[in-house]
Image (cartoon, rainbow, N blue to C red; front, side):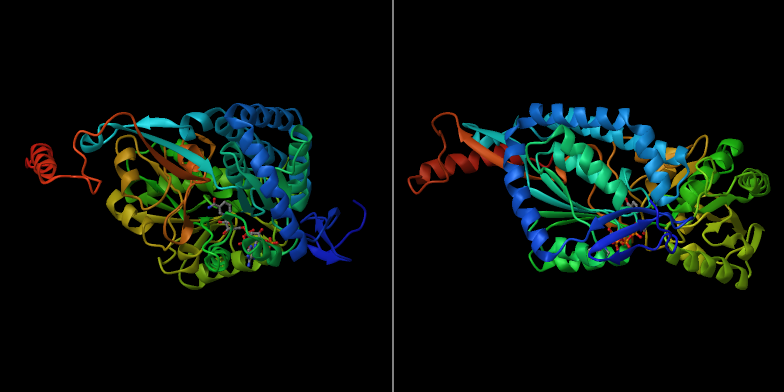
Length: 501
Ligand code: NDP
């Protein structure tokens, strides 16, 4: 941690990826860049490890995963400090993120058997003499590609569930957060020293591309929509299945009957936590006209109090990826040029590597700040006639990840109308910390699910088995069938399926 480099810009020096703090430029760590040969070797080793790991069974894996969860819990402070140091996020944000990840590991470990284990399912009336069994078997080796913004929670949403299902994992962290990724993998090796069940490969984007082509059985990608398309194209070459957790442009709807204090608090948190660098961050707010002024006043008052800075106790840290600052600046300037107003912050809020909270109003719906992912501490707040108009505008982008609704009476009903994978009613972002619920998007936000029972099944292939239990009375699936048997079968089918109700 000695040399000082361009803050936040990862560099490669003598075959090592160098990670730096986004505010100070302090070097955080050096990690060997993986070659194509290294990746092939890693996947081959993972394949052996996967067989061993699957052989431990649900109970054996559960024990190891719970031990891993305990190690992370007991070293939380150290992990949070590293997350702050490498990504710049405030220490409290780092703690909240790591705690959510720990909860997911525990849930996946506890529930894997119940969700995936072999069970009897109903049989057909025409095959009554057969028993039907269903179980979910691991794919083998999963390639996990992660982003930098939540370097613990997002990859762990795939890693923990893939491991609990019985797979080995080869993990490529973002080039912006390799040290956090390495720390997570090293801790796992302490509780599972026998085999390389969880490995890490470092490098820039092309190493992610190599991983897609290295013979893994599934790719779980979390990152931008643009990169997600490249991952899917690479995986198509070998018909490797993909799970894509991509970007978002989530909206909050504030209905006329909302608790405005609670809505404003959740809006400021949901939009500005982690400096707005949150895939499910609130970026747009649609507010019923009756309560618009009161709500806006509360939001501005809260956002104006937030402390921006590089120290761990700040509310809003630096923008982790320097290139993102240009996008944030462009969105603010475009909104202002097109008739929008900044009621807090504005163009001058962009002071690299920091961006102060910026609240924009009167922004046209086709502006970049409404249509594209901004990924900064900015919010557009738009007046609407009613909840129906709010839903229509909420659904007006190509993304569909999460979102929030504040209403005392219509929350669940409106939630169903929003085209997204998750919605929080009378809170923001809470679905991400709920291990029992699936997490993922639609449209430009990707497909497939992490978390919950669906997140466990995502890393498995269903295995269907039918077992004869006794002699067949009406044998249709044989060349020994007789005309009489077929007549009897048709009679039974008429009885069972011939009625209109
Ligand atoms: P990127 O798409 O830039 O990168 C994601 C990962 O993909 C990184 O590890 C990156 O490596 C790697 N990568 C880059 N190019 C390729 C390639 N050609 N083939 C394979 N892998 C590649 O996203 P960011 O890291 O900037 O993350 C921010 C984005 O992630 C935002 O859009 C955000 O919304 C989204 N996100 C989505 C979440 C979800 O659950 N839906 C959760 C969190 C974030 P490298 O960093 O070395 O370039």
